[in-house]
Image 1 (cartoon, one colour):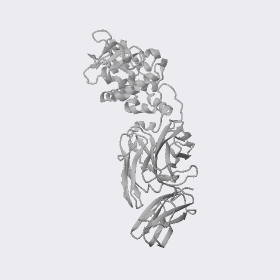
Image 2: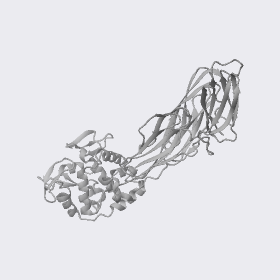
Image 3: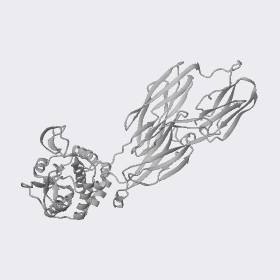
Image 4: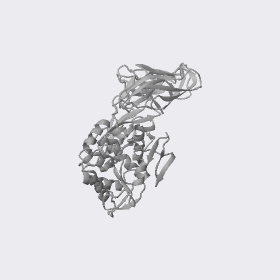
Length: 549
């Protein structure tokens, strides 16, 4: 589904928030339609520049992998617009939240909008999992799995050997660990020449061979008798040393912690993981067989050996026989929404921090002049992001204020002021943001020129026209604008709001050549970005100023 939004951004997002020193007034919400999992949805919107200056977008990014763009930077011509596409794709049937962040060299703050999108499974069978995670998802999956018919062990093995694992319908079965094949029309013998047994992936000794676990084919597989004995009741893991048995890629030996583990050949690793996930959710962790270390291995195997056609055929055969399915074969990605298959993990807030930008460059200033930048802090995790402190490593960069907390799925600003104290210098600093997620730093750079403060206006005639940056800037509520006229001429100085509407005529008369100044009092205007423009003969120039109340 393609959606089109027309937003005027980049100069309409500046406002004062009553709760913090600076924030967007009303950020836009880009809400993509509900889409199917593993399908790409998209939305487009326009970045409009209503000013007469080029707008350089130097960075476009999101914070989560589910949302992405295909542009990193672009320019917007004066009084023009540029289209931007944002994309969404996921394999999970849940709702995601994110931000799309624009950084511009013309602005002293990033432009931020919210992103929201939902995906659903194409198969209605698993619609009950929509939006569920952890314990709620485990309970729902257990209820889904717990409808299997309880067959006896002999009947289950007969179905497995004669039908379910006879993939080619030629009365031939294959050991899942070694690949050895034998001909059989029923339950094979554990003795030569067949030497074939039934592997209980979750060792049956841990649940005392009780039913229905013993006969649940979801974790039963044909296994060579020797391989079955070698596997025994050992944990699954990666064998790295002291191999005591090996066949066709399966091996018994020690892992990196010198624990004896059994490693299956690659083509069966994922099957093991998914059937154990099923067993633990459907039943329980009998005898404490599963632990965090082994579960980490299984999660890796689930990713490296994905579900293939044979595993799907087997799943359909099991359903036909015992009347239930393994959700981890149909949707192996569900395990990524469960923190632990064998224990209850309490819901703990986990804020996640990011910033924009991570590198700030201030305009060149005269000594003792000041300029401010608003660094955004994001919390794209859960629970409050608590900001303990924000510190600067150099005295020329001053932390004016910062939020003490950022709610989940929100952002706030840190206001940083640059004030050079030496001529013709490059100043660098890093601000450190200490919080309850992870310490992050933002790099700062500023430059000074060879002037001090605001130059005194004299009667010496200028060689050219010029329009100076207002001072102070940001200001509240008044500021001064200096300008120079090369010749006597009619002068017009106009102030515009961020939508390009004229709000004040500061000067509209003939003036002599020389240096002049005019004051602008914004007591009656709201906080935000304003533009002032001078027109005198063929000379015209526009500059930006910021009112902060």
